[in-house]
Structure formats: structure tokens, C-alpha cells
Image (cartoon, rainbow, N blue to C red; front, side, top):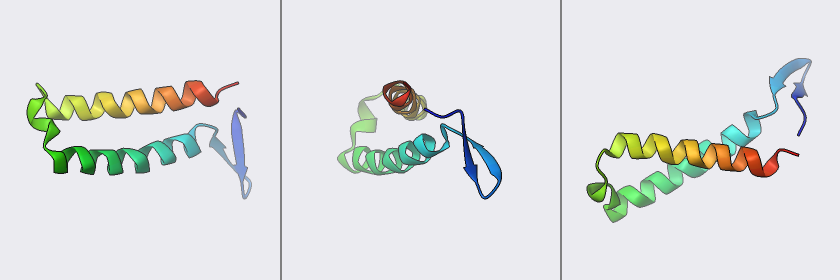
Length: 66
């Protein structure tokens, strides 16, 4: 994975595209989980959401980092 991405002479972090994809997919998964009512069974729904996003982002980052 490249350390930086050159975007019109603006250097962006290499994890930025992964962050964008994870954010969009998290919103979709979050809406599905909320529609199904699965957040009622968690101890702290906000903490579960943060942990879910952290797990998605770190997992995707580790899978794509070579």
C-alpha cells in the first residue's frame, strides 16, 4: 500500500480511500442493524457502533496492507 496518494499535487494519506469505503459500508450496515432492531440486544449501542466501525476499518486496513 502506498504511503501517500498524489491528488492534484495534494498529498493524501494512503488509508483515506479505505476509510471512505468503510464509512459508506458502515452506514449501510448500521441502517440494516437498526431496521432489524438488533441494537436492543447490545449493552451500549453507541459503543457497539464505534467498535463495529473500528473493527471494519482495522480489518480492511490489515487485509490491504502489503
